Picture 1 (spheres, rainbow, N blue to C red):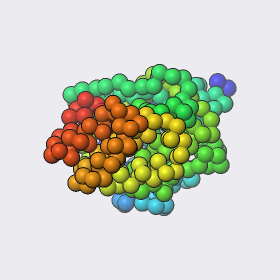
Picture 2: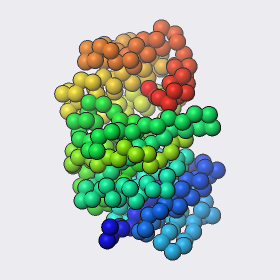
Picture 3: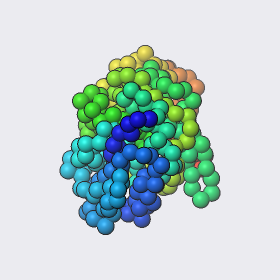
Picture 4: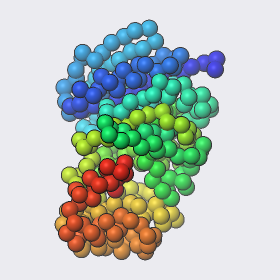
Length: 303
C-alpha cells in the first residue's frame, strides 16, 4: 500500500492495570507501518499516567472517561480524543496478534468497517472462533448473533463512525450489548468486511462486568430495548429467539418465573429448538444459573 492511515486504538479500562500493560504492548508491537496512537480511557477509576509514553510512530495517551460512566462512554471518549483516520477497539484483557492491523487495513480497502477471527484462551484451553464469510450484512446479524465479531476486532473509519452510523450507544441500559448494537448500525450503513484469520486473543476470565448471573436485570432491560429499537427482528425469527431466550434466562435467574415463561413462549414460537429457552426452563425449575453459565464458559461459550 502507498498509504498506511493513522490509527487510534481505544482501550476502555477499569481496575485492571495488571493486564492493561500486556494489552498495550500487544498494540504497540503491531507490524503496522503507519502511525498508531493507543488511548487508555480509565472509566470509574483514576487515570494512571504511568502508562503514557511516546516513541517514533507510537504513542500511548491516558485519559479519564468524560462521558457517561461505562464502556460505551469510555469508548466514545477515546474516539473523540484523537483524529486518526481509522479507529480500533480493544478490551483491557485482550491481546492483538502482531499482524492484526496490517491485515485488516489491507482488507478494508474503501470499506468502512472490518473485523477478524479470535482465539479464546486461558492457561488450560484455547478455542478458535471466526466467521468464514468475507462480508457480513445486516440480514446476517439479524439472523444470528456472531460473538466472534468481538469489539476487540473492530477497525472502523473514524469519519464513517462519527458522521455516519454513529458512536457507541450510551442509551442501552447498563451498556449491555453495545457492541452488537453498533454492528447492527454499521451494517445498516453498508456490509462489514470480515477476515476469517485470527487477529485477536480473548482472555477467558471470570471478572466480566456483564456476568449474566450478576447483572441479569440489566441484561433483560437492554435486550428488550434492542428488540424495540430494531423492528427488523420481526423478519428474523432465529435472531429474535436468541435475544428473547437470553431474556427468558435472565428473568428466570431473577426468580421472575411468570415473566421467564412468557419469554420462553415467545422464543419457542419463533424457533422451537432454541436452547436458551430450555436452559431458562431449567433455571425456573431450580437448576442454579451460575452452574449453567460456568459450564458453558468452560466450553468457550456463553448464554
